[in-house]
Image 1: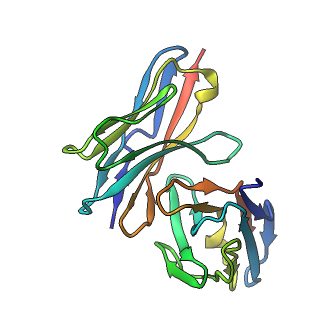
Image 2 (image 1 turned 90 degrees about the vertical axis):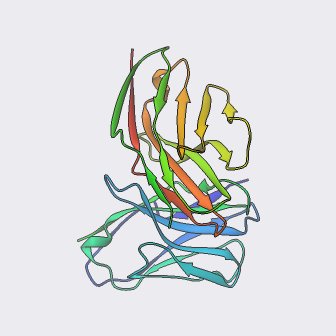
Image 3 (image 1 turned 45 degrees about the vertical axis):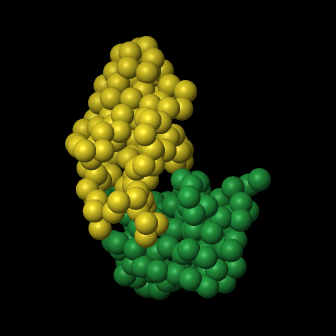
Length: 111
Length: 113
């Protein structure tokens, strides 16, 4: 099993550009989430999904959109990139009663 | 909302010694889970150990054990016989009946040879 696959691993954007961070899992997990990690702030939840067709906002959703058309995929869209969105992004998935399996992360820089 | 507090930004331990990483949580949910993750310098997040709020015994996984004190709302991670490879960031996390995950700010552990 590949687990949770995130692409790209690194990305540089100009302010105002849009992009999609891809996330796919092959473990048939119901739950998927996106987190951002900033120094001294731990991981903060951006958006999450408890199943295909269902998404909800986390702590820091502004500037991001998600969709969950299939169980496997949970892309994160940055609508108009801002320097404040420079961060490391993690996608994670889990079964309802389990712990998260994390992707390897995407290091995003917005200039 | 849940809140997780990790009060130790950095810890040092001698190789082969035991170390305790502190974690306190704040929740009004009767049912919740507690997790510890390790993040080495390479950046990946590695699941270490899980404790359910109704579990009677403290969870153990190899050299990791979770010292769960429900009344104090604490879930400290104990690493026995520290190894150089244990040097990493450690995050405590909790989930509730709403199934959202909340992470602490982490503790950086350095194992000294």
